[in-house]
Structure formats: C-alpha cells, structure tokens
Length: 117
Image (cartoon, rainbow, N blue to C red; front, side, top):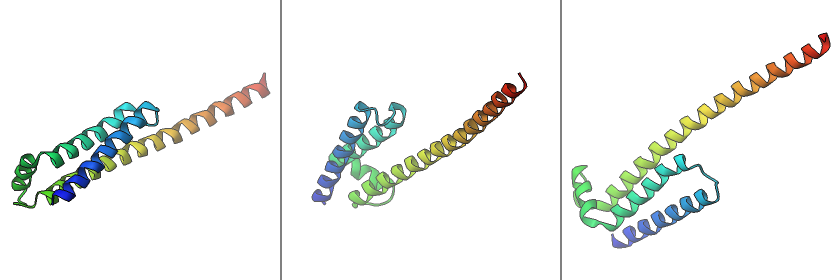
C-alpha cells in the first residue's frame, strides 16, 4: 500500500512540474492551469498525509482501503476537469464558426462595395 502511495506522490509531482513548465513556456493559460495545479496539489497532499486519506476513505464508505479512495477521488476530479474542458472547447469551436461567418460576410460586403464604387 505504501508503494502505491509513493507512486501516486511521484505522479502528482510530475503533473505539478509539467503544469508549471507549461505555464512558464506559455503553452497553457493561467486560468486553465489552476484546476490542474489544485488537482496535483490535492493528490500530493492526500498521498502524503495518511490520516487525511484515511478520514476521507472512511467518510465515503471505503473503510481501511485508503489508496482506493485516493484513486476514486483523483479519477472523479479529473473526469470533472475533462468535462469542463470539453465545454470550453465546444464554446471555442462555436465562437470560431461565428467568427468565420462574420469574416465571410465582411469579405462579401468589401467585394460588393468595390464593384459598385
């Protein structure tokens, strides 16, 4: 069980470093990176603080199986984050379509006004 928690600690540290490097290189916007930073810090805290993990495990009804609770919480948080980013990408796609339509209308008006003037 300790080996699993150590692996989880390593994964959360790698995730934390990846997000920080991505912010520094401007590969990810700060407002989108905050949820990743919180998730990585929460995963790190729960994997290192055994009493807190045991408390959470008992509260969600898993008893002494605290690593399972850690992965259940982590998986749930990441699913929620992926859903949130799917919504953001969908809005961006809709905005891009609307922008392309506006550009096409403007080009049409520019071409037509050049023919009549």
